[in-house]
Length: 524
Image (cartoon, rainbow, N blue to C red; front, side, top):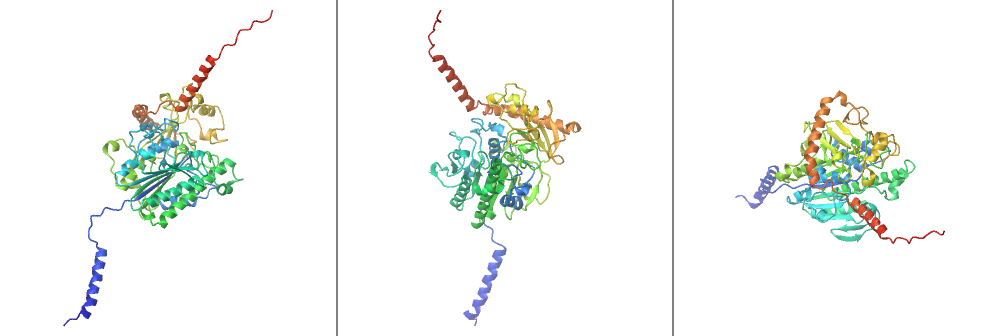
């Protein structure tokens, strides 16, 4: 007779074997895969070269470098030459002109109301969407982030002018908070993440740093004092503070065990500004120019244990952000939107273990916009460029309209002065001839960025077929986009000019209403 005492060890052993078998070959389930969280950090007016991993001679940026080293880094990546246009392209997957964003001034920074942006798509897939910081796509009714798919919003009331102890506006409620603005932004990011619980989230964290006006706690400025001038020291201090806060956020994700299922993307929004004369990674150009240095950006994508860290040299751009995030999150893009997209999913490049062929004939079109209202057509060839592979076709010139001047908020005066030999310009005290340099009249210049990063050797005459193909593509692009851009407000009159004209009219009216002094006859 077999007793219970004998059967018990056999039964226990059988249980263990079954458990092991189930662990090795689990039964199929209908559970949906866990969706990744996404954090997108966009810095404002920081240059591609402003991190130690890119060779900066003064900055020590261990956390920027951590993003550089631990993820996929796109090293041939481009944004727009100024901030509102870049933001519009990132959130729509379309060139900013398609949605009427041609400037950083009101109302030409308004992202067209009919545009569908990324958080609106992600909401349909179950994402909780958070926005923190700088929006710059209009806060007018119907345009603000809380009206365009973001569930949780935080910013400060006075934007770039308010560095310390700001009045924060969180989900419509104002609260004065002690501390430095960017420190508060990153703390709010952690609050949003904590409050999201088990729900997948998308967080768009857009800093004001290191945009002017420049200010940051002195402890971040001190290491640079005496090595550069005070403005440059403050600028570098703001970058150092960003590095500190990126480290805080990455550590927070690790502590909460969220890092392995959270994609972190880190990018800058346009070319170099206040650090231009310190370091520009060898490039020519700065913010609001058509040169490479006006639009090249760092673009770091980190997803631990999913992507092998590597460098990508394929031509990529901000236009690719939306289609990539949609594919990574399993978010469907409706066909009417898909048909208008100008970007491509980066997933094949993110998952690659080495160089791969990917849209090798692609061209990226750059135009600074920023023309005086009503003068879009006259600026077709003013500050424009085309990128393909490692070549740049560029026209960095003033328009031919003599009426385009600073008086009507035009920006061609600077280029005319540089053409006459001026050495100073915005962002540079001595290198305007390099960074704002003028291309030959009446034609495009061509440069090989792989072998001539400073764009000193125009090879257009030796590469006529390439010049032709790229310039013809530009003509087609401009001509197709131009009427759409006009219809969506890209050439609308700027509010500052309306105000200026109103003030001038008021002054004339006051002058005409003044009583005429009585005529006094001279004594004979």
